Length: 523
Image (cartoon, rainbow, N blue to C red; front, side, top):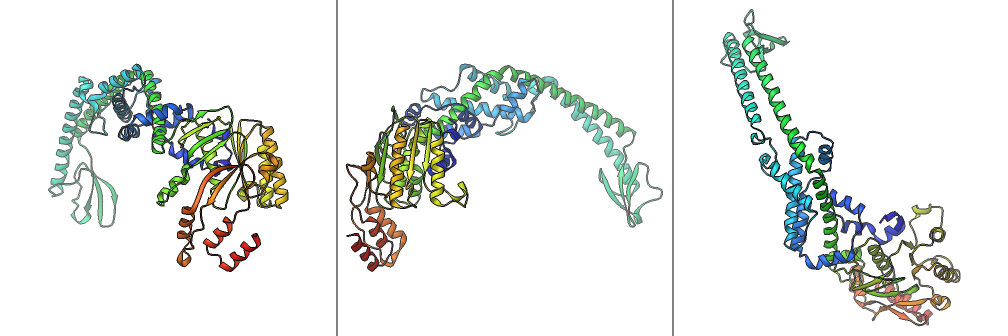
């Protein structure tokens, strides 16, 4: 599914969609192409997460990670180009990886690709086997063509003859200079040591006040040997080109099967990444529903991962949201995370993924929208917080009437309570007209009763934890998390005012006298 049609930038940021995309990212280019082209099956993902152990997934991902991208080589072979040794090596490594993955799946009674794909990979490995040179090398072995061995023999003999002829010529000049030996290429001759005239065959390349930079010319025998060597090298190059062309033609015959193998590899790469995700986070396939969203013990995974790194526990939540509902609760009680959990599960389902929950049932939304206080950069710094929210709401409501879930986090909290309450009541009515699913988190009272919406409340503090000695903030937050009940409970009327905010203020270090005065004012 096109994420741009499902989420706008604000919603993607609020739900941390980038985290999810990283969590299901395939190993290589094959998987990325397959992810862009195909839609996953959540039930198949969950089934394989239960059937395939972590070792099997490791083996598959190792094979997938080692496979080079052979699409360019196959394209060149398909149009009749001669491949080079690097391309043959890539094809050989791809087939090796593909066959390893196929063997791993076979142990679990699963196949990889078509019979044509398997035949193409097996035959190509056999075809190129003589060229193996270690793990990451390929060499045009003489066994590919006896003529290649003969051409290499002639080239080696011609090179030896040339080396001998050049050596004789160089030794003759060295003797004339009174030296045991000189370099085969450029060398320095001091002017004080230079005979006059210079020996025949010695050429001065550059003169300096104290020395001459010289080079030995080849004599007639060496020049003739050089010509024979160049001729032998050209013949060898032609022989190697003929072998590469013949091998490339054999590869071209297998291109359709290898294309099938690459497509199967891509589908496996994308699938294994999602199976790993489902296995790691104990995901389930959501049951389809005509409308709404319902889940039990669901987790918002980006936060779960963050808490796990800090060694802190995560409290899953459950919710039944058939249409539009209001969510109230204490500060730091998890209202925003409840919204994100709904959006994250909806995102998983829209992408064809299983969801991190014990059980889930929901429709497949075409649009997920987040309405909260957006970054100033989104609508311009000249707008107030409330104005940015209004512009954001207008954009959401101007979209076509799609199957939409709208997640509202403290909308209108920066205006007067009376006007904010009125706007939220009107928003509930508009969302119902559009048959949208929505969860609206707010601190404003009486909205659920006035709008007739379902009302959920987070239970909140089970008791006021003691303020930590020394006012340590991390210790205070840990105490708060331990005392907070994040359960969502349906209520039949707006809850009475809670003093959780005042308890939180005291826990975080606000002085006792001020907090006591606030309690007194609260009555």
